[in-house]
Every structure is written in C-alpha cells, then in structure tokens.
Length: 147
Image 1 (tube, rainbow, N blue to C red):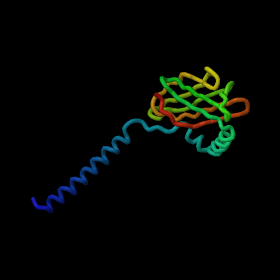
Image 2 (tube, rainbow, N blue to C red):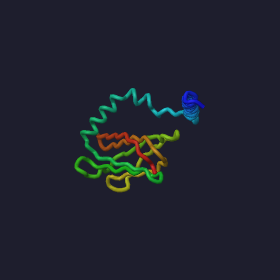
Image 3 (cartoon, rainbow, N blue to C red):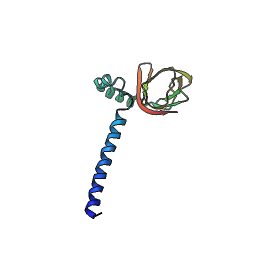
Image 4 (cartoon, rainbow, N blue to C red):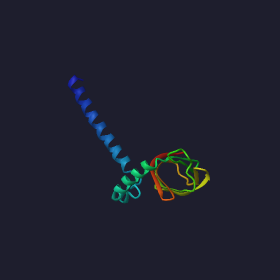
C-alpha cells in the first residue's frame, strides 16, 4: 500500500467517523421529550418587575439560605442585622430540570427564621423563593441540587 493510499483511507475514515458521530448526536437530541421552561413567556414579559424586585432585595439586605434534602425544603432567613425573620409567609414555586415536575409549597415556621415543608424533588431544581413579612417582599431566584 502506498503512502497516498494510506492518506486517502485516513481522510475517508475521519469523514466517516464525523458522519457517524453527527448521526449519534442527532439521535440523542431527539430521544426523550422536549421540555419548555415553566412560565418562560410570563417571566420575559415581566423582566422589568424582576429588576425592580432585585433593587428591593438589595435594600432589604436579607440573607436567605435554602436546602432540599430527603424531599424536605428548609429556608432560613435573617434581616440585615442578622436577626431571624419571624412571622413571615415563605413560599417556593420551582421546577425540576430533568423531569416535568413542579416543586411548590408553603413553608411553615419551625423556629425563629427557619421554615420547612415537604416538597419532594431530586436533582437540579430552579427555585424561586418569596418571603413576605408585613409590607416587605423578598424574592430570590436560585438553582440548587436537591439530595
């Protein structure tokens, strides 16, 4: 076999491998159900509201942490001085990324500044958290991994 023939086989082999890889990627892309993000259009229409809410969040300077373990969501909230936020209404309204399943719940207080609810969920979740106390409203959008 001559050197020219080896080069021809190498080039044809690389092109064939590229065509096969493209076919596999196309097949995987069409495998399973497609998923549209929940409330995508509504969030886009109200983008200015999200900017205004971010300004109110900075003014309040509340610290909020969230975890979901074993299907139980735990939200802790403190004000700018580090005092636990009590007597608040805490709500989450998210969606799992891998499956079309909502993660929704009204959390109940368990101790000062800590709120819990059984919501289920596993894997990565896009999770907005809304905390209302008196006339103040704090909304935080986050993505977290439920374990």
